[in-house]
Every structure is written in C-alpha cells, then in structure tokens.
Image: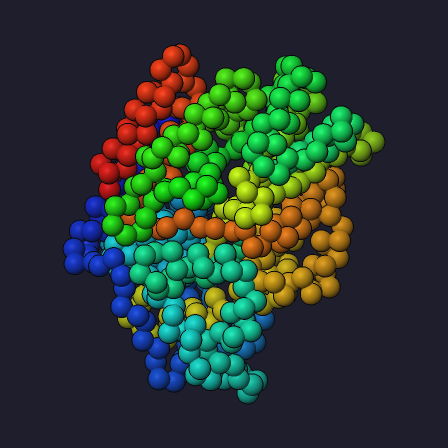
Length: 469
C-alpha cells in the first residue's frame, strides 16, 4: 500500500509539472504533418529509451545494423532506463525542459501523461502515407503501412494505439504479454481434474483441490488490478472511460463479483500477490508445505512458474498452461500487456519520420519479432511470425518443462482474438492502482456487514481517483 501511495504522489507531481509547462495543452494532438518528400535522407540521430536487459540488446544491435543498411544516415542511440515506471518518470521530467527522447517504450497511461504537454506525435498520417522513400541500395518502400502489413498485426495489440478517446493513433505494439492460467498438470491428471475454462468451473476445481489437500491454497493470482479489470471486461460492466466521467467502476455488477471472490478467499480457495506478500508463483512451484496447484500470472514469466529441476535434471511436476477462466468461454477476454512504442514530437520533422521508419522496421520485421520473442518470453505482434522457420520450431518444442516459454507463447498466439485494452487517459493508472488495492482490501473483509464494507471501499476508491485527477 505504501508503494501505491508513493507512486500516486509521484504521478500527481508529474501531472503538475507537465500541466505547468503546457497550460494550454489539449486532450488531443493535431495530426503530425508528413513532409512532402517523406524522409529526405538527411543525417539524424534518434534517441530510444527502453527497458531491455543484456539478453535483448544483442538482438536489437543485430537489427539496428540491418536497418542501417537501408538508412545509413539514421543513427539509433538507445538507453536502458530501469523499468517501465522509470522510463515514464524520466521522460515526464525531460518533457518539462524539452529534452525528451525521440522514441520510447510506453504503456497507454504513460502516453496519456505525456500528452498533457502535447508531447507525443500522432501516427495516422505516417501509417497512411503512400510516399516512396529510397533505401541506400536504390530500392524503395512506401513510408506508411501496406494493407497487408496492417492486417498482419494482431488486432487487439494494434488497436491499443487508439485507446485515448480521440480516435487517433499514438503508439505501435512492439512485443506483448498477457495473463495465463498455469496449472500442475501432473496433479490434475493424477486426480482426473479437468482444466477450468469458466469461473464456475474454477470454483469447483478449487473445492476439489481443497478436499484432496486441505492445507493447500488452490489458486494464486498475481495481479489484483488485472483481475478486477478483466472481470469488468468479461461481464461488460463499466470500469473507466477516456471521455466524460472517467471513473465508472462503482456499480452493482462489480460489487457482486468482488463479493463472490471474498467468499472464495474466506473458504481458503485463493490468495493474491499483495496478500501473500510475493509473487504467488512461489506457492505454485513449491513441493513442500503450503502450496497451490494453479497460478494466474504473466505469460512472460513462464520460467518462474516452473519448479526447480532435481539433480537428475527432471522436474518434480509438469506444468500446463491455459487461457484464464472466462464468464463466457465463447467470448473470451484476456488483457493485453507489454511494451508499445511512442514517437515524440520534435521541431525537426525528419526526426519524427526517421523514428517512424525504425518503428515500422521493428514492428513489421518477421526476423526481429521472432528473435525478440524467443529471447524475451514476450510474444510477437504480427501473425506472419508463425511462418518463420525458427519460430515455428520454437513453438513446436513447447512443453511444461525445458520449453515452458514456448508453451506460454503458443497459448498466447492461439487466443489472439481475445485481447482487450482499457481506455487510456490522465488518471487511468490511478484507477488501475485503486481497483487493485480495492480488490485486496475486499477479499479480507469478514463479518455480517461485508456488503456494506465493500460498498464503502468502492466509494473510497472512487474518491481517491477523483482527488488524484
């Protein structure tokens, strides 16, 4: 809770700074005007903030070299800036003095914050441009995306760039993750337990596991925020809106599912990261003491959901991975996460165009998307990666042991039609934090007045969102 409060205070301070530096900032940006000739071949240097570790920079270096064969006058200088929030905080500070980078990893709420100062370039005119630009070898490409390239993107990932309430495109997806259900496949098969596909089935499975192992906590859920937001999406109840009244999550439908999960918690069926005090994968991979047999967590963290191998190299149990439970299995909804790329407005439009060419290169290049996925644990954002021989071999190796990352990626690719993103606006990150804290608080309520306690907690969360906004 202290971490959430500190984060909220920091965001409030950044909002004040950005609003002060751009008092006339609007909620929408004017469309970026593409220069008549597109990229003119001039020498430009593009600064790129990301969160890549040492396992990913060799992949990036390889493809920067490939990009420079096409555009030798575009220099890419990248900096790894800690985690996603570190990128947001550094850029928000730099915007106040006009020293922001050209390009950065981003989440939607980051972009909403930057746009208090109108700092992010819109991409629509670049995406739709038919201008031909020349490569160093004399070949050409159109500046924008072809119809085939647009169709190649996984729809839910691509549409995230337009979740800002004005219909304009602000980001392009780079690599993505979601939540998946990890389960102890060995235990499930030994006890003839079917993998749950709905929340009702999950409740029955939790009850069965509790009978078989009374000391267990059948389910661990790592993100209370994701859980709340996903339930809103699955049942079609209000959460937030990018326009008008932003904070809409205090309603009877949402209070009802929180009450249901409170009952599950009181029965000992589940725990969460904040209640457990650590990622619940620790319970899932345990083979002694209190343990869980299911874990809902990030698809990019699959290796952390695998138990340690013994001296013989074998794992104590096999891990299965499935789509998270649904209210309606015929209309699945799972959250889209992972970094996108945003381009910052600059006085020199050639910097914006050059940044776009690099973004286009990374996001549509099958080789990069395949290698980056295999190295990172995140999944590609274009469907044509499935035709890449190396990636196809990677997916074919999928199992619940040595190749658990491939199994996670396989599940993610199979549910491409299910991804959703929430509206992005200044305050959307506050709403996310508040509903996560709300879920944690409500699971712990006891007594004869749980409904009243839940109602008060919801109103308090709304008040905090409106105060912070």
